[in-house]
Image (tube, rainbow, N blue to C red; front, side):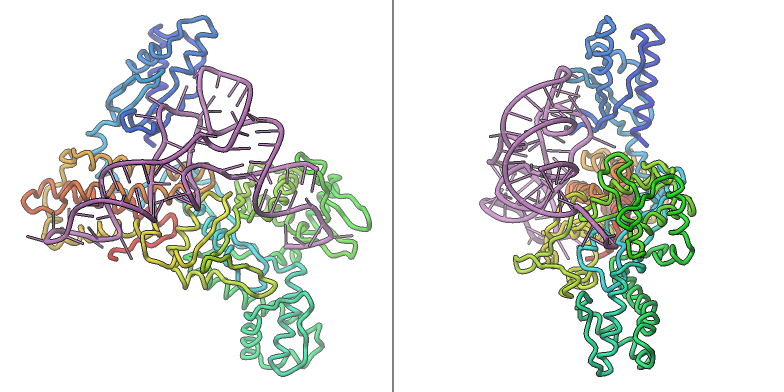
Amino acid sequence: MIRDQIRAAIAHALTAAQRSSLLPTVDLPTIEVLRPKQADHGDYSTNVAMIMGSTLRKAGHASNPRAIAQLIANHIPADGPIGRVEIAGPGFINIHLADTWLQRQVETIVQAGDQFGNIDLGNGAYWQVEYLSANPTGPVHYGGARNAVLGDTLANVLEAAGYRVQREFYVNDAGNQFNIFAATLYARYAQHFGHDEAIPADGYQGEYMLGYAQTLADRYGDRFLQMPKADAIAQLKPLGEELVLEALQQEVRKLGIEYDQWFREQSLYDRGLVQEVLDLLRAKGDIGERDGALWFLASHYPKVDKDEVVIRSNGAPTYFASDIAYHYDKFIVRGFDHVVNIWGVDHQGHVPRMAAVMTALGLDPARLTIVLHGLVKLIRNGQEVKLSKRRGAIITIGEVVDEVGADAVRFNLLTRGPESTIEFDLDLAAQTSNENPVYFVQYSHARICSILAKAEAEGLRNVAVTPDSTLLTHASELALIRKLLELEEQIEMAVEKLSPHNLTHYAVDLAKSFNAFYRDCKVVDATEPALSAARLQLSQAARIGLAKTLQLMGISAPTSM
RNA sequence: GCCCCCUUAGCGCAGAGGAUAGCGCAACUGCCUUCUAAGCAGUGGGUCGCAGGUUCGAAUCCUGCAGGGGGCGCCA
């Protein structure tokens, strides 16, 4: 990455200055390479001279930061990406990228193609991203779309950063909610055949249950009414689960999401892993008995003040019991180096307990990251649409995608940091207007494609000579190249913060940079074939950058609009 | 009561301890016989919730306070 090259050059300059005794030999500070806000402060800058200044002052040496900066700057080799080096302000060293180097990057980008922007941060580390996990009791309500989009985009970004990533959906099919679902399903199924069978008091009221009953009746007839109710419910359970998961998969596909694995909670019990892990914790003294129940003694661990029931006094395990086994399975059985769980803020209380679980299992808690995201308020006709799965008055992910389109949903839910609450206005999102920055970005991509097509039609893309990138000297051309080269850093940032919202802002910036170039520089011009060739290559690079950014966000890159 | 998150332009939001705090929308003024006007250029708009502190330097870190949201179950 460019930043690393700059950092290396500065480090080299520092040691060179020390070796020639121009700078006293003290421990070098970590070199921060910053991106100045103002263009005339250069492409990169470092404050290392000011840090050194205070270190040297304390050690009784001459400590004028500007003088130190000058010493360091004198030793920075002006080659490769580094062009002009200047001292400014209280002691900043400002570094401008060299035009000739920038120009050469156009070809590099085009050659990289869809690999452009990829970096090697992960070094092949094996990560899991688990997102959208839910009870398989019906369609996922719209708020889940944020979870799904966040997790899926993070997975994309991690892959681009050199991680091996597994995408997982945890199916909570072992808990009480799922039993209630099965009982409700039985009732709806019986009702379908005219029986007077009431839905359980805490059952699922949603209309979608009628659809499941209908499907079961179509596929299996009334055979489940020819047996005791308990047996029928037991047999309907896995069938109902399959129906729900099929439907979920369809919904999620509308957002462009494919999971590598749908992991069933029940499988942890079937394999005896829950018992095994509880025994293990008991042997370590992390399990205690109180009020007839078994508790995980989480309060023994930092930041947790409460213990947590794992086996109820009625003998039934809690969700938390299988969750411990689940994470044991992730780290110890399957060997992920790192796991990212995407949860809504309403699960925040569970976070410190999971850290305790990690420690209790002998794992470094830092290997588990839980990304909490705020909830989504759906606005229609200026009013909040209430989401309640139990009451059945839900709007599903699929419905919203059908209404406003997957691209608008993904982009809008990605623009804000995870911790924010999002008010998603359906009426606005449905408009294909400039209210939707996603169209701005896509339009820019389509425009490039149109230019490339026009050049093709006029035979300008068949120029025999390789494009001469040194012809790209216009400020808008160089600004566009600079913006394109930011992609690596944007990916790095998204990974480090485990938050990809910066990509939406970058996409808009990149589109604006292209639009400025388009305004200032005529690309297809038969009277200037050499310049056209160079600009066409730059346009191609811009298309690659925009398409890559959109691809990371799971948003389509249309060739015409 | 305790814990977590949020508070930046009229609205919605970015801001990796750095220099003159940005983007979109809305408002106002211009630009389509020209490669896509779903676009472009320009203008106005700010005590970065409040008060202290740390630092050469704070929207950013620390403490307190206020307002908003969430969480504190033998639910998930």
